[in-house]
Image (tube, one colour):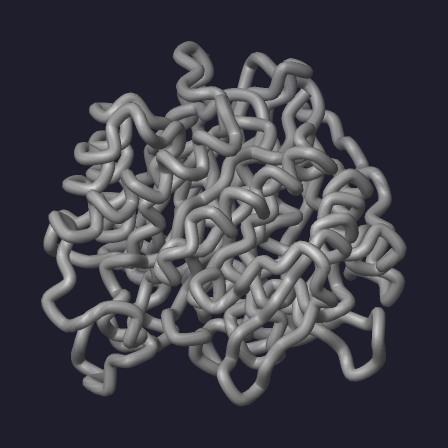
Amino acid sequence: MRLTAFLLTCCAAACGAELPTVTVDFDHPGVRLPADFLGISYEKNALVEPHFKPTNTVLVNLHRNLGPGTLRLGGNKVELTRWQADATAALDKTTGLAVIGRATIDDLYGFLKAIDWKCLHGINLASNQPAASAEEAAYALKVGAASVLAFEVGNEPNLYPNHDLRKKGYDCPTYLPEAVAAIQVIRTRNPGVTLAGPATARRTDHWFEDAVAGLKGQLAIGTSHLYALSGGSTNPKSANFPSVDNLLLAATMAKDLAMVDEHLAAAKSAGMRYRLAECNSVSNGGRTGVSDTFISALWATDFLFSVAAHGADGINFHCNLKPGSYSPISRGTMPGAYSLHPLYYAMLVFRDAGHGRILTTQVKAGMNLVAHATLGDDGKARVILVNKSLTEPISLTLQTARYRTAGVARLVAPSPSAKEGVTFAGASVAPDGSWPAQPVPRRPLPGGQLTLDLPAASAAVVTLE
């Protein structure tokens, strides 16, 4: 059985263009989506601030809204965070070094239990103090073993020279014996521990591929990082320049998925699972006017389902908790207060539709339209439609003989450049972090048809029963 959607815009009709179509194949369900696919990555030094505590109700609610997930402690600050068992969490603003201890880990794993998420727990590699990292892992396992996905060893070793953590010329053959020696210390202290890495930044020199091959048998999960566009690009004509147009280009998505495919294949060859442990729209903290607008939610909705369809175990959107950045969540001006940004709403879309098995879709359209679909264990099919055109609405008809009713949950904003006013399923997240969305009304499908308008710069989840 196939579901076919006929899509027609006024422009297409006037121009005599071929009618755009979307086809979903129900007969051959593909990869199963892991329950903890969705995740957020935080800079590790955020632990010294009062965020990750089980009593932080707002932040607990914001994570629980997203269903099961994976919280990563990572970023460059992994290598600038030190373990001292009896220390009170503190940040030395002069050196940039953060110190954490047992009390910090108690709070973190209490928070993880409250939100029912797993932790990809980054530990320091660059400081050459593996015994301290091993002790940190041991205490985390003692207080929260059920919440540990894995310990990620180091962060972006292929950029160590850029951050003055190693001398210029540091390469993968130099990294590998360091990593193996540190892993041996960590494993000796924690037999059977699950480890991840190498947590490499995006490069074209095959660092990731060489690292996972060299660490075969040492790591269970291969991890790498991806940013769609470069925050350091100053050439507006470059394909990596952080612009709205570049972020929404099909070529940008294709380039990113090619990297995912390469890293997934390398990880599998080394006997590892693969997770895109840090990613977002624009590197170096994002770009105001791109990363913090509704545009990012359209990109992220497509990105989430695309990476899932390619077979990765999951992704973690990086979050530095700063407003005006690429963060889905930012800290507020008052303790315990947080602001939400459009990207978060793309995660709500995935929470709603990103479970079960991936269904293959084909889109034939003369516009920037993408479609994804899933088949849940509840027997419901969910078709995710994203209209990336900033100006052209789309009218479409869904046709199916299999399903009798449908509900439509929309992802919309006041404008493509909006930073506030975003809703999914008719609701915005409340100040207390709760999401008061009501059940989506069902409508019958007379003759197996549903007519749907998809405004410019919007998305929708069509749930078929």
